[in-house]
Image 1 (cartoon, rainbow, N blue to C red):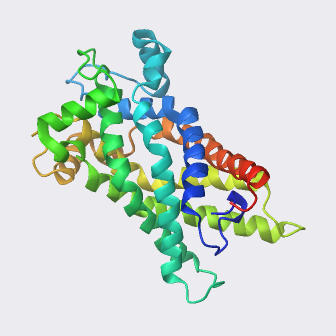
Image 2 (image 1 turned 120 degrees about the vertical axis):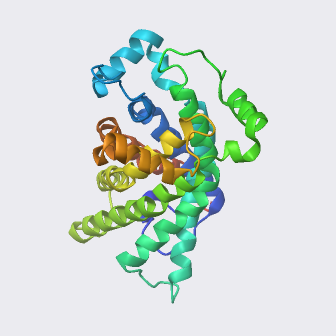
Length: 306
């Protein structure tokens, strides 16, 4: 990925540069969007109210207000260490996987892929990112939800959480929810890159110079982020419930979560937490691509040949 503006070209990706620029963009994504991600997870995993009782949270703003009141502003940033630590390799693997997915389908060095091929290449990137994202998501969800119901604090940060999970159930416990993460990321990543490429192609066709500017990159990135969550939200709800549940709650994994959710809460529960995530999606992904653009411009100045 030479620059954000040239992501749709067929130039061979530089893995090292993708690691650095993608990591910086991912950090921008996490810093701008984590508070709303915490609210999303808490809405998805809040206990089911008994008959006649009010739910723990009435909605996005009620969840935010109660979190700040009980835990302070820092409560909105719980679990941020896990995604911050993983963003560089996650984004590097994601973009490298996308580039590889495109290369595998090319019939010539300058061959332009169809949008269906772009979707396949984007889905291919989900295989790469899941390897790192799944354990990070597992730790993040546990840290975000451990005091949501007023319970005792079990984990003292990312390292402590990872150590206790491994001690309790080995790598299987650390990677719990990997299939659910892949179920979310394969189709959602495909749509993410498809929407991004389409908007950038339209912007380039309407540009007098034939170049893609920063504004179109930010708009395409933000729109792609919203498209990702429209498609990926149901699998994300199932993933959050599975990863936050005590061992043995769902014997058949994501199938048991799905059956329990549909029977007890109805299909609309698959989009629980959609409000904060959609509010977050555009600015967080816009910040991500803006961060990547800044990093690429920095390298263009200090190391043009890199």
